Amino acid sequence: MGQKKPFTIEEARRLKDLLRAAGRCRDLALASVAFDSALRCCDVLALQWDRILDASGSVKGRVTIRQQKTGENVTFELSAKTRVALENLAAEEGTEGFVFPGSTPDTPLRGRQYRRQVKKWAGLLGLPAEDYSTHSLRRTKPAAVYRQTRDPEIARILLGQRSLMATHRYLGLGQEEALAKAREVEI
Image (cartoon, rainbow, N blue to C red):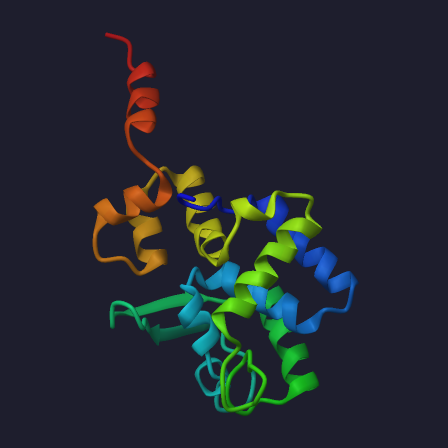
């Protein structure tokens, strides 16, 4: 079992390209929002149109929501491509209620359905499905940002976590990272 892998930036981009080419509007919007927001499954699925649309009906570039698990606010930005994916979804399905509705418009997509979809996406990329979950999407951007900046505080903020120690565990930082850094210092 254990912690699931994040997608690489290349894998995330390839997935979005495949979904776009296949005309999978909802899947493209779901994956795009999940990658951009770094939200937990429950928070992605709870998103409602009135939280992500501005007064003129356009998709906001920056969104703030209250996380279900912690009760803390977290702010994230939606890329231009994600905003287009959401605008296409809105044109196709409307902007009432949940962004990603379940079997009825007044209920969100169920977590189990979302988890199954992520497994299918991993398979579409030729990756072992058992290595990926909805948390893989949550971890993708913060892990990439951390690899680029080496600043766990930035990743902590993106994840909306209170504790830097939790972020270290979440990103898989620990002894190996410390030893790698120690090898760089010659005394």
